[in-house]
Image (spheres, rainbow over the protein chains, first blue to last red):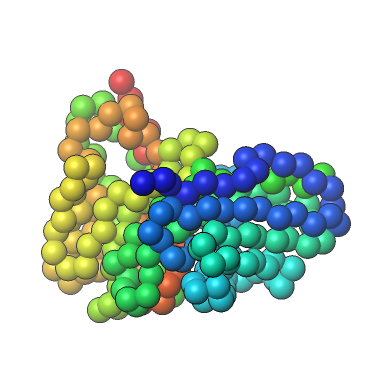
Length: 116
Length: 109
């Protein structure tokens, strides 16, 4: 089975620009969660997509938005980039729907965004 | 959200057992205890999870206190490859998983 793949692996943007990050979920998974990880910190939950709808959101402003497609892949969009948006962005997929806390997340290697 | 408390860092010698503690005194009855680890330059990796009973898999063991207010991740023989940040996380039916700062494990040869 294929794992979670993210693209691009690295990118550099300037303040005020917009960025789109992409994630292909693991085969058989139907849910995608996005995390932001600043240097030296744990991952911070941005939001989760299930059945193409946002299904939970962390403490992030509306300029962070996302999409999930019928094949369960996902995009994270960030508008009006700020210097503090520089981070590793992680995508994780899982098989949800049973409402159980037992479900396990499979993470990608991340996209490292640098905002200058 | 129920929160967890872990030591910032721990050291171990290679081929010795490692016990990584986690306190979660406000755990609810539906919270599962998950452990993930993150090796340098990689995304987090699932290690083990449990609800009430101790669990074993090929990577590690999870010992859960009887009152469920604490748990311990046990690596039976640490290798250099086990050097990573280990995260203890509580997850309930709400479908998100919230990470803390984790424990940075250093393994000395």
